Image (cartoon, rainbow, N blue to C red; front, side, top):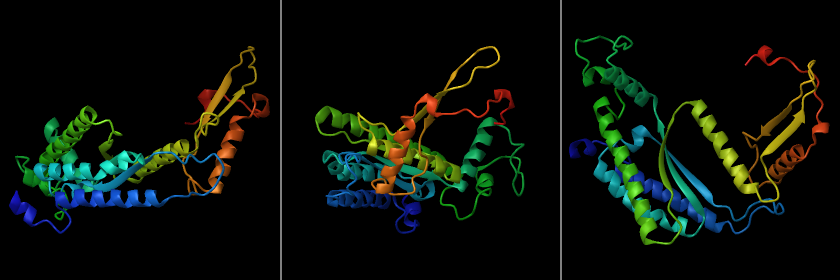
Length: 286
């Protein structure tokens, strides 16, 4: 309610969050517009590629103000603000990535426990007869901006935001012939493994979009034959290759060297590979 919103720190209102997102997109658009020249590395660099933008926030920041109407108003302004970056054919997708905090994860586990009816796994300072919201609120840090009861409000807010994005997209397709606005609201866990997986996804997409062409593919593949076994059976092995980490800028000359390495590996013939030893699959420690 209004009373709760008045206690929010500066910058934590729904309006502030969507305004910040808009400012970040404006900044990216300005930098892309000023990039009139890139590092010259031959024809391998795809200078006409479309960019994707990912804006990171946390659940406790974005939904400190879980008022649905405020978020939808902010989303409508954000949608209008980002239209130019799509119409200029610089960006193909904008993702707002909400990182789930540990406090939120604890609360979600508490909610799962309530819904399943299994309270044996719940540990707390004390165990009252009835499992109230206050009981589960005591399970998390006292300074968290979200309570368990507020989590339901957050979930409703998320669903309404996604529905509004869908409605805006449908309306744009029906009324205009300009480039579609691809806006997404996604969630991810806040652990290092999740960030590592996301980084690998970024590297894979950026690498392939920047250098892939009809004549040359940056996804490597190494194929070779295994030697015959005692029964005269023979099979072929095909290994797909890709970089998971790039140590240099995507348009740097050293990255082009990595592209050439991948292409050279892909062009290797089966006779170029020598199998040193074959072991039974059952003996391989996974």
